[in-house]
Image (cartoon, rainbow, N blue to C red; front, side, top):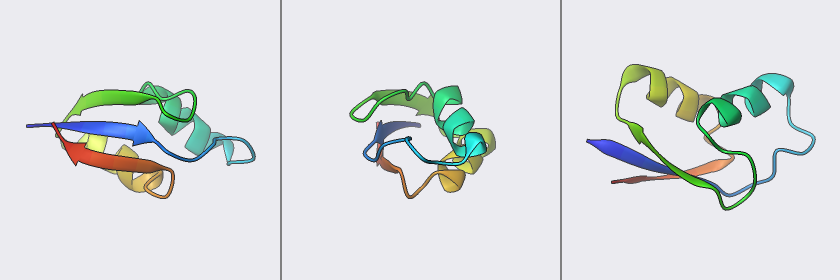
Length: 58
């Protein structure tokens, strides 16, 4: 199964590691959507920036 991840809050003023995590998922600006595999690495990244993203099942 895959997950659709949408950036819903800005990265401006966030910690550098949160910005790097979002960029590693392919999210650069508000409204960007990416599809990622449902695995432990992706789930860890989502957990780290859960307050910035919206996740749905693909």
